[in-house]
Image (cartoon, rainbow, N blue to C red):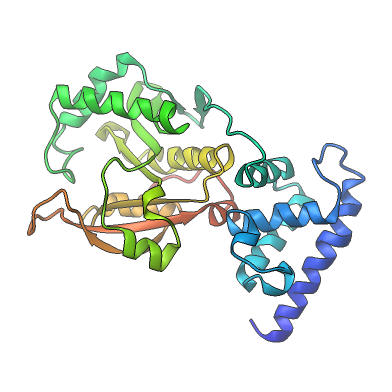
Amino acid sequence: MTPAEAEAQQRRWRALVDERLPAAAAQHPDWPVSRNHCFARILLDNACGGPWRESVAPPAWANMPPERLALAVSLGEAVLAGRQDLALLNHRSLLWRRKRRVPPPPACLPGDGFSLRRWQLADDEPFAALCADPEVMRFFPAPKTARESQAEARALARRFDEDGFGPWVVEAPEGFVGFVGCWRPARPLPLGPLIGQETGLDATGLVEIGWRLAWPAWGRGFAVRGARLALADVFSRCALTEVVAYTADVNAPSRRVMERLGMSEVGGFEHPGLPEGHALRPHRLYRLAAADFLDGGGPGDARLE
């Protein structure tokens, strides 16, 4: 961006928050704010994925990286056009600033032709069958026994109580077909250098997104569409600023899902849970910022080909 273009963008920003949004607020009594500094807070926080003053020195319009200021402007334009929910953006901003409590997780997230729901004891049997399927588990060290699957199901279900979010069961018309969602990694991984250098995330506070689906559910878009529902939930209700995902280098299907979600590849690492020389030991790390997810249009309804 040239200096002239940057200056023009700054003028658009000032006009947006000082004039256009306050003027539009008179026609929108349902909007949560009406003052220019409140509009600026909401848009800048959402463009930065957290309180903007933590990463940008004031005045923001002069010091914000051009691509982030452009995102803030695009969010404001989307609010004016009715494509973004100002109340939701404000909710996220206040959560980041610790001025609101995180609401409890809903019982269900409805999708188009499927839903995401909490775990039930009746899921043990189909989950065990899924985890015993060599085709489903071909990118894991080995299939799981019924006892191992049951223990994993209990641990996944507890995530909602421990963290306020977790991996959701994917409920299709035929019933349980797997899970998709976010959780905090249970084991330490050597992601510090990648995280610190490329994402700015604290490696101890990572949240990952993942999925595991029975093979009859493959190719029906559940991974991408379910992940987008789960991401919309944690980025809005929980105000997470970023999530990561990782998988074996050779797991092309999962890597395609990560790319379809708009995640960026950060780099590679060796998974410490696998011996040297194991085909699945080399892994790739991906990331997705909340601001980029919002800019990409949120949950969407994309399908895997």
